Length: 258
Image 1 (cartoon, rainbow, N blue to C red):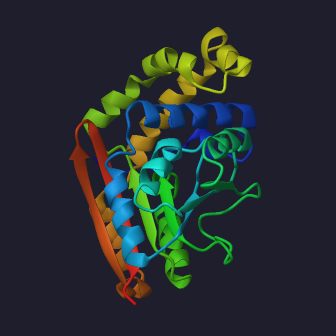
Image 2: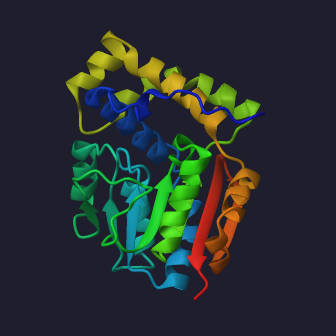
Image 3: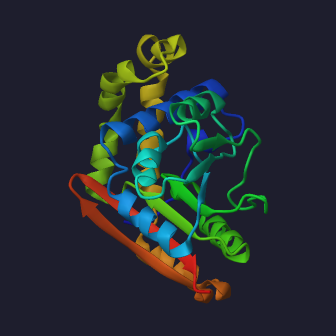
């Protein structure tokens, strides 16, 4: 299946913040419900140990992604770990809720952070969850180049693949939106309005979910992008896909060799 970089509502700078925040809230909730963080724990723990990093800079954090469950799990082996949550369009209410769940571990960057131009003062292992597909190939190259030039390790994860099976799965997403949105916290009247009374969120999740599958990169495509970056040879890379239980995890992990 050929990769198609189609239109996603969530990417548009003019897209209403209320709707974007409701969508990222839902994605965070789904990651937690299906415990998608569990296969990631040993991968991140290993790179933290090898690089001796004490901090994580999470890019494109959305509504917090897997971090409410992932940070406590990582802190079992890395008790001093700090996680900075950032986004180009930060969902501050959701990110502050994540921070409040473990305030000694989380910080929230209120200013916009571009994954292609991360401020130099933000040092640590860079992570991205469910966001690489939002970027075109030249931008993906820029994300990796920016990390390499800063000599920071990077770990990128996706939980979907560009397959017919995942396309069908995401086509059913409105059903899950209607079933699961009742349980999202903190409670929001806006969520009830735009999910059940005026079912905009289920339709937006359907569109962006299907498009996300069509946009998703294969390991071979990411390796090709890395091969186009001369400086990438100074990093050790682990790129692949693995199914753990019901969760399919794409990973691209890079760390400096020196």
